[in-house]
Length: 112
Image 1 (cartoon, helix red, strand yellow):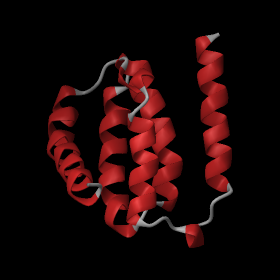
Image 2 (cartoon, helix red, strand yellow; image 1 turned 45 degrees about the vertical axis):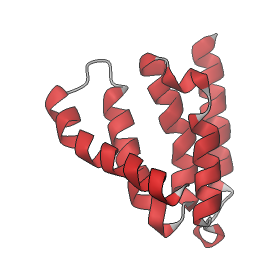
Image 3 (spheres, one colour; image 1 turned 180 degrees about the horizontal axis):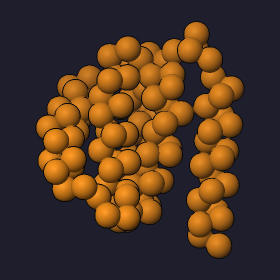
Image 4 (cartoon, helix red, strand yellow; image 1 turned 30 degrees about the vertical axis):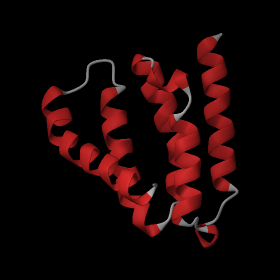
């Protein structure tokens, strides 16, 4: 049942992302607000399922994110996608970690 609910949520988020065209690009403040809402959910911190949920909730934001935050969101998505795999590639995670940390620093400075 949990998987079915997760699939429904992901499908809803994907559908809402397609409703937003690139011409509806968010400002830094709007991007920050949406990301902070996603990050505030405690369910996004619960293991592989949480990482999947986090990535699926960030994807539609990434599609319309401000120019300043689009690249950091891409780095976060790459990291969470790898982390959420059944058996994450440790070498790949080590390669992605600096980008993930830099993305976190960017969000901290832009989203004060």
